[in-house]
Amino acid sequence: MLRAFKADLHIHTSLSPCADEEMFPGKIIEQAKMNNLDIIGICDHNSSENVVATQKIGHKSNIAVIGGIEATSQEEVHILALFDDLQELLSFQEIVYDKLPGFNDEKVFGKQLIINDNDEVTGYNCRLLIGATSLSLQKIVETIYLLGGLSIASHIDRKSFSIIAQLGFIPEELLFDALELSPNYQNQMSSFSEMMINQELYGFPLVTFSDAHFLRDIGKSLTIFFIEEASIKEIKKALSGKDGRKVIT
Amino acid sequence: MKLKQIVKELGLEVVSKVFNLDTDIVDGYASDLLSDVIANAKKDSIWVTLQIHQNIIGVAVLKELAGIIIVNGRKPETETLKKAEQENIAVMVTELPAFEIIGKLYGLLKGLSYSG
Figure 1: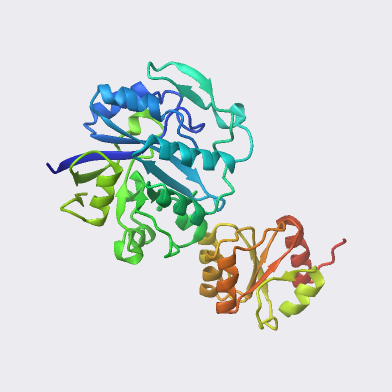
Figure 2: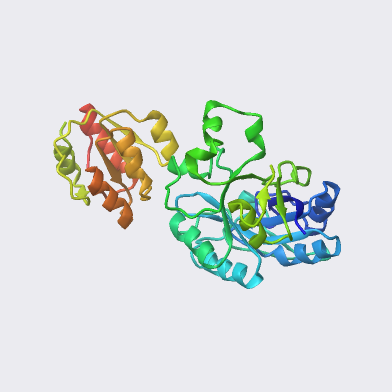
């Protein structure tokens, strides 16, 4: 049966060096529950190593957790890649890791904590997750498409790491499933952001998520999908308006 | 100063097949944020960047820039070159990092002397 699902598909964990160290899977699920979210997406910078733990905890609390990565292209554009299948996500992670140079300095960028489903720190990721891959935007979007994932251009209204800031405009041949607006876009409706949210200008569906780096930001901005179940397959249908599925807000 | 003279003086390699190297260059702009170039670059400027994405051509056309210098030995993507040739935008590459090529370019355009 089709129903409304509240989704915040862009949440960081303490694996992202720039995220708050409190962003443990269990606490994230608690916060999602408090905000009546049905679906969350875990998208750390260039890694997915806290996805499985969050999925396990989410399962117990009846919150669907979709695994993802916020990948950084060589143009320094952020792209969300979300997958139904863990193997697809791991294949994507491998491609990203292979093209991600450098090592993290946690004194400079922050810790990159790997957490288990008991909310215990089990390790540290030593890669430079804050860095950029040498993969082109085109290549990243194509790879997500071929692996069957959902690709979303992150926070296109932001002045850093967004496709608009880095590349000026969206090349029409990119196969994005949607463009994401950050929670701030409502407060700062400049003529620039008004232009941004003119859907017809780009012809891509628009969504908005929190990009939460702190617990308090989870669910701050969300998109409601009218779908049958919490999956990328269904969300894709909603984004293209197929089989009665749709985006409500 | 004519673009072809700048190419010669700075030892740039012109990688797009174009025929407009006679443009008079009055100014330059350096930025890797294309949104910033759209906002601030002036017509007939030469643009120095490390971005190699095809959108640099779109921006150059939009802002009527005279040419693009890609720094640090980076090579433009195939699509970028194709678009450059369609739009007759001169794309040049240099092995030098941005700081050095911009310094030399500034010296040339503003008539200052530089060593090296």
